[in-house]
Length: 186
Image (cartoon, rainbow, N blue to C red; front, top):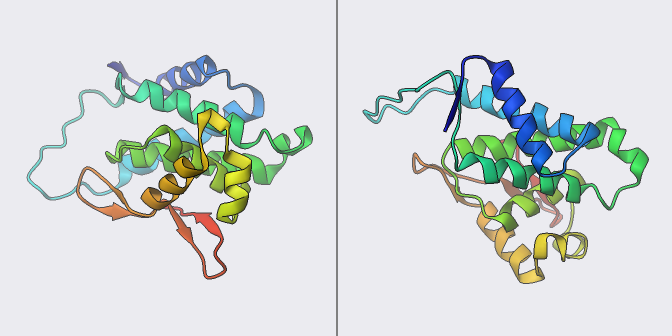
């Protein structure tokens, strides 16, 4: 576990973890901004009144189990935009989608949601390419990170009811009336 006295030190460590995933440029900056936003939002949420002390060891902490998730966010963020034209990477809407994806993933992880590789990948593709049909999602995401259509279908189902550490059930994606999958802003 690594502890940091300042948010700047925390972001430097997160940036380094994203670098080990091979993430670079505008993608890396967008993912870093999203993780920072997700961490900030998680910190200001009211803590449950369940009798737990909710102590923090330091202001900013990266646990050993956080590192694979950070790397996976980097890999998925890069893969999710690989189908787009190179000039689209700098487009504001793509940067915003990547930032939202990273923030949503990180915040869910910090709340104790256990996200699989397939779930993180599906969430990334839905955020960047959505709203998107299940068939289109399967065609764009199949083969990415070794996912099959069955993996994608299962991830879509589980992302609609994710349980947090506090026992709360949240939907990270939803299907609208037209049958299109959309990422939530949870």
